[in-house]
Amino acid sequence: MAAYQELEIEQGTDWDDELLLVDANGDPVDLTGYTARCDFKRRIEDAAALISLTTGNGRIVITPLTGSVLRSLTSAETANIEFRNALHDLILISASGIVVRICSGPVTVSPQITVQ
Image (cartoon, rainbow, N blue to C red; front, side, top):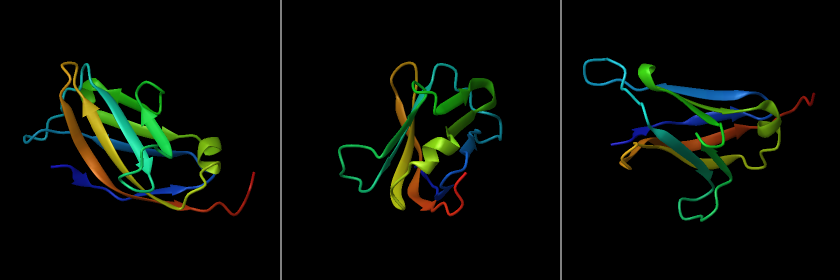
């Protein structure tokens, strides 16, 4: 079962969120060969994502032997966010095609007041 995770993004700042995946013994999960996707959408049923983070577009970085999955956006990217509330989930895809949802939940964007 996917973990519930609330995300907050401060508009106009660099944002990252690192998840460290461990097994029942507390050892890092080996993520060798995995890719990942994370979409932000207003509603679950929306076809298009507001933001799409993937290992392919460099917005998700997996460090296989430490079990680390790092999602990130630059300050320029967060400055352009036009929504205040959304939903997200994060899936991992193994080299053999097995898909696992790691987490999901709401996303809140705190509006930028001071502009650089």
